[in-house]
Amino acid sequence: MTNIPKKKWNQKHLAALIIISTAYIAVFVNIQGFKAMLPLVQDEFLISRAQVGLYSSFYFFSTVMIAVFSGRIADYLGTKKGLVLGVCIVALMMILHSVSPYFGLILILAFFTGIAFSLITPSVNKGVIELSEPSKRSSSMGLVHGGGGLGGFFGAVMLPYFGEMVGWRTALLFSSIFALLIAFFIFRFYQPVVEKKKVEENEVSSEENKTTTLKEDLKYLLKNRYLVSVFLMGAIFGMGISSVTGHFPLYLARDLGTTASFAGLGLGIYHIGGITGQPFWGLVNERVFHGNRRKGLSLLGLLVAGLIFFFGLVVSRFNFPPYAILLFSFLLGFCTLGIIAIYFTAVSELVSSKYTGVVTGLALIFPRTSTVITPPLFGLVADITGTYALSWVLLGAVVLTLTLGFLYFSGKNSKSACTNSRAE
Image (cartoon, rainbow, N blue to C red; front, side, top):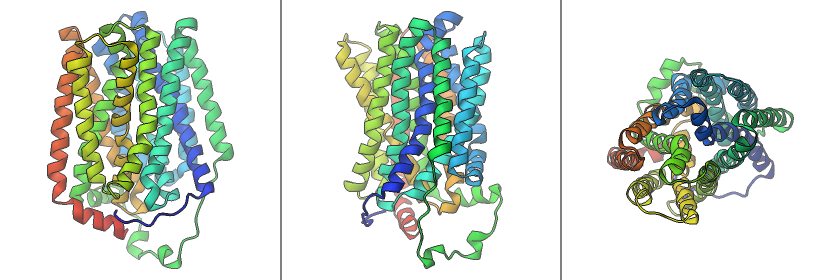
């Protein structure tokens, strides 16, 4: 992963990457927009913070269950079909959210929404790896996944605003229609770009061409110890993102005393941080660390831990002005969401393109398992103590421990893993 020859951006490839990113925009407008309206939902259904956290748990529980299978499906369907199908189903689920009379029913719908979303990420990553030169994979991944941050920003800022005006159900209905329009846009305009490869790159061994079972693929992938250690960082990114997106509006509104609209703005600024952070950290990883994913992931893990401690020990205890709160929200998103691009690039580079979908699905199990467990516990601690301060501190301790664990366990295997990935 070092000294990779740099090539100019292919304009057709860049256009295809931007079109792929619109799938994330559509989905995150709905999902993050709904989470930003959770203070309104909580008021209507009179539920606790721990119960609010269950939404993320139900949503990600299904994604954990089918993560590897969704990767296999993405390999079979291809990028275009996987994106269109996933976005359409998410839109349908959100329409049903908007007419649900009980919060328990919304939790069930969250479960099926997670299944639909599971088709999108492997399809996105498959498209990025196929389109991007090795020297631009991390920044390309950041560009596409930045679409999620952009969608999250607009959803978190606009939906609570409209939700206070016309009700959260009506606001969610309009965002669902937007997702359907994006699905049509992808169907109409996305054309897979296939480069002509050199003859020797097209020649693969009979072993590569041989159809293998999912069990055989997983057994092969899990033999890579460095790959398994990278999955620890996936757990960190899952914990940090799910806790923030699932509770941040409530934290700002309940602990810091802001309005629901400002709380949504805070979550939106968090996503703006992610939009800028993902391509930024991708470039840092390629230019400063010369493609060394281990260094990039380790640095971000330490920064995320420090920021989470800062929220628990400083922000929660002192009365900061609104602009400072927004600045801290930006920095949290800048680092926490910045992990995504490097994480998925790292796991995708460690295997041949044959395994891109499956390894993405496998890589998703770790962040999504942490997202099932963390948000309810994060909220439960807040229910017990009356504030989110201790929740932040405990989360920071776990993130720091996992980062140090990654540094230790990856050290022995990273050099050989990088050599193998360059050979691919």
